[in-house]
Image 1 (cartoon, rainbow, N blue to C red):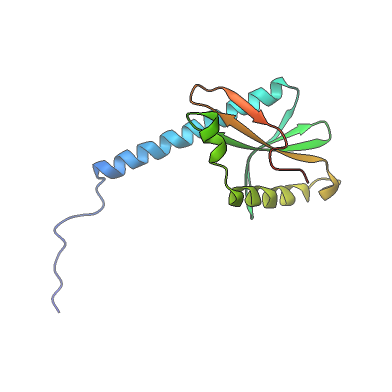
Image 2: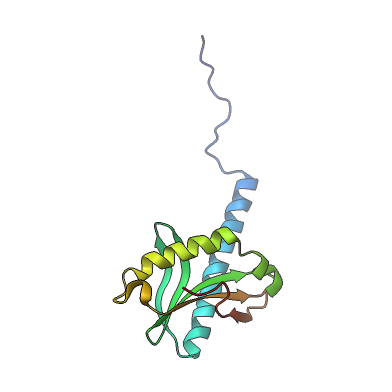
Length: 139
């Protein structure tokens, strides 16, 4: 069997790959900006930022805020409209957030007995924030 040299190299970026990479970076930066906006909104209401982008073995939580002794686990969803943002939260994501929250609570002095709630913060295309407190139940 004779080996044939490749006539094309696949290391060079293609216009499609470049566009996909730019969209991905734009989405990442947009998500970071939305999370920062939501964190400021909560801080203006007197809560303190405890952790950003917490990653446990069972999932990730965008923001964790402290409201006195209670913890608020926040999933930030951004889209052109509040409705579209809300619809993008899946049951699978909620399970992963619960799992990550269980891991996080295990580090707390009161463990699973720590008061906690799960909020969803929606950010629309104009940067407005709408918070749905206790959006998918409590612990």
